[in-house]
Every structure is written in C-alpha cells, then in structure tokens.
Image 1 (cartoon, one colour):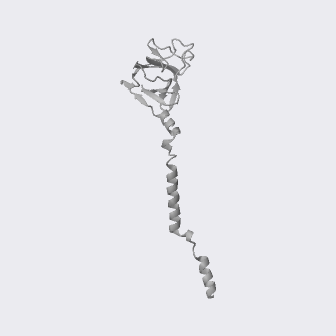
Image 2 (tube, helix red, strand yellow):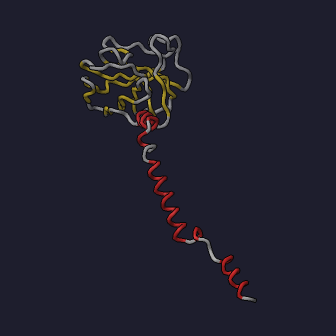
Image 3 (tube, helix red, strand yellow):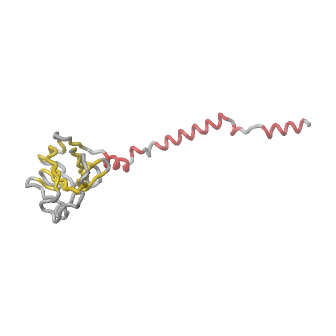
Length: 186
C-alpha cells in the first residue's frame, strides 16, 4: 500500500464534523429548548376549551347537606327530597322500575345576576335531567313558594325520573355555557 492510498483512506474513514457526539447533543438541546418555548403559549391550562371542560366538571359553588351558602346575594340550602311512584299531576304513573324524585332547594334573597339553568340529578357518573315544567310526563308542580326557573325569585323545585336502584348524591345546576354554577349535595 502506497502513501497516497493511505492518505485517501484516512480522508474517507474520518468522521464528518456533524457526526461528532458533542455536535449531536448540542443540536438536540437546541431543539428541546425550542419545543419548550413554543409550547408555553399553547399550554393546555390556558385554553378556553380546557376552562370550559373544567367548569363542566367542577362546580363554582357547593352547598352541603344541612348547610347554607351565600351565592350572588342569596342564601342557598337543601330543602327536601321526596320520591313518588306517581306524580300528583302526572298523566301516568312512573314506568316499572323507576321513581319520580322531587328535590326542593331553598333560596332566600334576591340574586344580583339571575341566569337560566338546567338541573341534573347526579349519582357517580350517571345523571338525569329534570323533567320539563308543564310538558314533562312526570313533572311534579312546585309548592306555592317554589319555582322551576332559576331566573325567578324563591325556592327551586325539580322533578327527575330515575331508576329505583339510584342513590343520587347531588343536584347540579348548569348554566347555558354548560358550567356547573351550583352543586347541592343531598
């Protein structure tokens, strides 16, 4: 082997500058820092979608059983929970294996910002929407001092058609944006 051939082999087998380990590690570090900096403005915790999801799972206010909580200028507490096999004003009896659960929530005072709401009876991952007033087959008319509308003053009363084996733990009042404004524990 001649000297020219040895020189040529060394040039061919000599690693390139970009294949050195310190260079690869430096490029990897720059890419990692750039990805971290790019992720800051799109953080999952700052997105409106995440805020809406969080509001739909975590109530703004919680009223425990036997307690009273001040919310928006009103005092809220659990009134009563009753079960019926047939609503006094219903067109028909509850289907076999179900019951009509009526929940009354006491409110006193005047809300500074009354808003529309929908009531849901909650048991773990199961939930039942309240019967519609004057249109639901299993709706129970509210007492004289109660209403089924969150925008009106006074106590609230909601009717729910639920399975017999249900053991609900709370009533959620959900606003138009699907956020839980108040959770009343039973």
